[in-house]
Image (tube, rainbow, N blue to C red; front, side, top):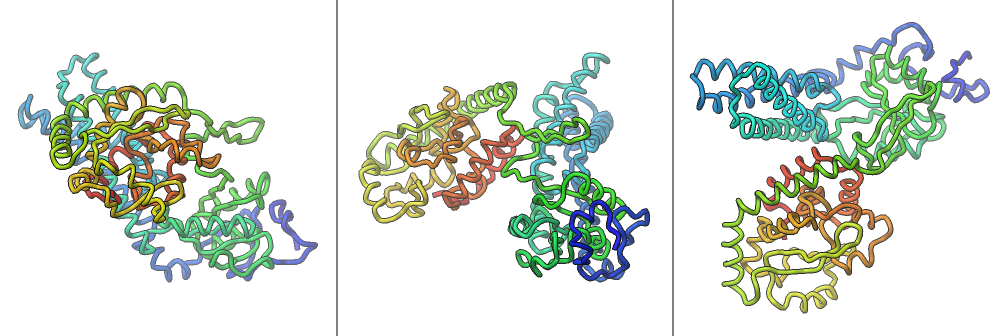
Length: 508
């Protein structure tokens, strides 16, 4: 049997250990195209009207239509105050088309950004910023009368509404994927351990859109199943398996393929019409931290280990601005809530507590009091009763909480005095929750990483379940934020926080 360079790595003294094929075998280096079997595709309902390729087109068209409608309507409303109806409609049409083109040029409607993660939101933000710059240049160069209200109010409102469009579209897509629809047919390539771990992880998160049809191992003798999915062949069979199964994506994990073999696999998959995705052995590292740098024919993957100073300064400026504005706008709510606390139970309206901030520094955190005055004394007895999750004390029906306090907690009104901590630079709008000294004292080494950034008024775990999450899950989400935070992620978390507060989910 003749093997190519990519196959020879897995040959075993000439023995053919490959699985049974539905078509005659072709080498990875063959110049013949790998023709997908129409019988397989036509018998698979997911390969037809509800397959990922058809759904992706409909999703992109729906988002683009929503963008055009939102931007056009917002522009028409703002310009109608300053201009006639016809002029407003013309400007609205131009603005809608320009914004959609900016998003399209940024890849916002393409495959990589469709339906998964914050990429769609980030592209919309960049398009809005480019749109504002274009308006400023048009006003300066051509002396066009661009209303300030449109730049300062209209564009931000339109951006927020385009995020609403994407949020609705993503939630709809995720509901369909939870039922097994709109998935990408996927084959995993790797050793049993690495492949099994990847299959389990992706099976727990169907919203990413990968339907694992099977795996290819270094040897088909290693196992008949991996993590509940069938072994479809050896590594040398992967391209033929893709053609036989009509797979759209090949995920390569572990160290079974690298170098020249991986390069040849990419050539063969291009003829088979499938995408190649290499899964690096990196944990909780998001795309913005990764940069591919070519050198001497190699692709060097650089991981950003610290946030750039410019991004830190921008976050600080945004935090101070948003917190100051929120204090002014929400001061009536704070005064009414403080009065309700003071009049319904003995004790002061504001509760002060020492918390741990960035790099282990301590500060005094402010909250509206939601518990009875002797809450700290009663805490020891409740801890002895076993109401603890990890290092946290959590109790869904805490008897120390006052009736007014329950209302304040449900809508997170008790947290609003922390806006003062943000203005003073002790906290941020988004970040891990500020821990108690006693909690930090028992942190494992890896959890100390939470203290690498300023604690926040809200954070990733607060918008992912709030108090319903376990301690381990909360730590995992906090560490993910610390390692991968960005301004766009902060804006998305703030947006999701408003939704979580209004629904009251997980608050107690």
